Length: 266
Image 1: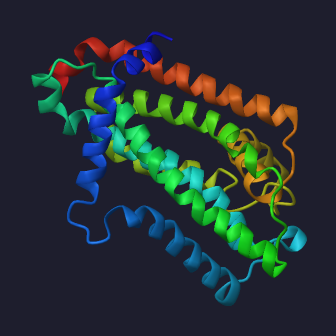
Image 2: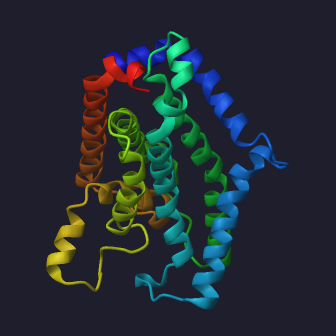
Image 3: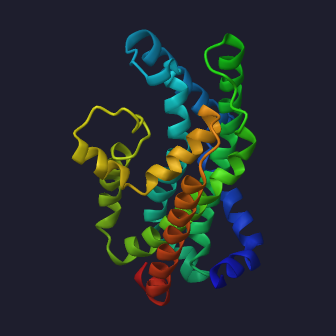
């Protein structure tokens, strides 16, 4: 709670740095912030073409696979993008951290908020795609979509914890920056993002291992609410929240462990 209070007290500085981060990202772009909307739109278009006309996977229940895939990728892109940028955020902001007396926690927080804004800007594309699918009779509109803010809570907790831990560890162990991308690839393919664990044609021992992946509960929770329209079971809610809280606690612990030496190390 001390960390949360610290970030709340520094919320004005976080807002300034988030604005700086977003402006820097789109400074040389003609369309600017529109790319936050166009990128997921183009992504969905590519998936729709590829998985409808080129490669049409047989999906249980006849649900449109592009939408299934899109609802798994959206939260994943938030998590993976944040983790990748967190691995360099303290190092890249080293001069600012050394000159300005501000808590180092500010910079991973800015990374999380910036990527969360991108995620929020992508949600209108998801809603529009769900409306089109419902009108065309491809897939019923999920009545549980209003619960999506609740499903984002464990994602925010886990992503925030990962950002804190990775940012601190990357300062102490510089090789971690190169390793993070490979670890994310392993996590991506071991999580039910591009496939469903139900009816998965793999050996039973492998399915048991895949079901132990803690990220799976967060993906299933988000997809149940944003795609299938199925009310998540209490066990799924509890598991996802436990994963989020534990992820936040571990990340905060790691950051606190190295906090005092971060300024000298960058």
